[in-house]
Length: 309
Length: 267
Image (tube, rainbow over all chains, first blue to last red; front, top):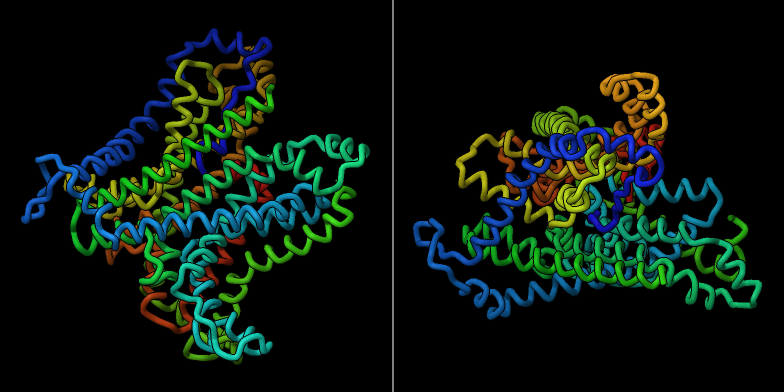
């Protein structure tokens, strides 16, 4: 749920309303309304975030106090140790796979959601959104039971009893398991922006193309796909950054074989008590997420300019 | 519109959508099934039928303490988020001023930042200033993560509200407070109610912030379930999870009734 998915626009720019409102003390009112929330954010969000990032450049003494001198040693340690770069690559790989599969699966769902009858649309919307308010822990527990190794896992029971396999498959504690779990957790974040982009497409465009003899695939490729790109960009950004920053799903479904950056932060800070190194891992994660968001904003801007042109 | 979902495309789209729905519901259905299983371990297919796990869970003082703490925390966090978020939504939705877009972006910024890292950063801040009050630390953290949701739904409701009614009331000589109380608030009330319920659930379900700040006496319910998943394999975990699922479903139905789901989450 990123800021990119929201546009806050005032409807008052035109008409007599804007004028009437401008007679009220124009800067005083919003300042008073914003002061509590923005100072809360500055104190408990911006300040701690800056502190944490600055820790990654500081030195921790053997007694555990953190201070000068400034150093890049922790970053060198992170990028120079194969154990840690492996975790970084695993994180990127899992996030990328999850995003790719989410795109493939979300397009059909969003298309049906937008174009089906009222009842089907309502049902699909409910099923897609409902899991959002169920705790990640609960949903991941369900996947642990489904993917469980041995005859008690649901999937293995299905596969064994239908005779598709004769030996139980090992899925739990693997990257595949983490991708499946993450896909389930963040799927709504792909479907919803995509559905709102698809919902804005003028149906007459496709009808016109159909009349002119374009095939279904051609209509999708030339009309639906390009016009839904803004929704796609938002969805990909959300799914990728949320997967990259996840903890619960890799902790329950990945075990030691699919360690991700979030688990490394937890381990460094709560087990090893190495604050500067934990801060390095956290900063790397933040950098990945912010980069993805910036790229997406760029893509959206370009898309908007193309549509406007 | 429904006529447009025909032909060969429909043959492709509808089965994939159906499969996706099965995928979404599968872990929930499996959890509910396991919670009724009359075996001392998690087994599928469930054998027998029993409600003993529910009986065990609702008599478990640890579970009840977690539940009460989570509920109290979520209510307090939602109130805090409303106090901070609703005025902020008024500012960005109802006023034109330079820096408005920047203010809106700042208000929503905790949503882009990885929540897990927000949690570590707060842990560090609280450790630095020596704030040992776990409940207060958790409350501050939960207000921080729920406020953007309130800002978003409240701003969306304000933009949908009909400003000409306020104009009319002003022309008829109503004062600012009277307009707010009698015209604006009734119009945005359903959106605010849905938004606050959603904020409640965001706090109630939160794991990645609480994991840094909680302790044994202040153990929110998602943390308790996580600990039980790691340590125990009996179906009582499934029973706890099922209770969480039904509670969430109830909230979804209420939100859908009050304001419409899509509007409440404003994606």
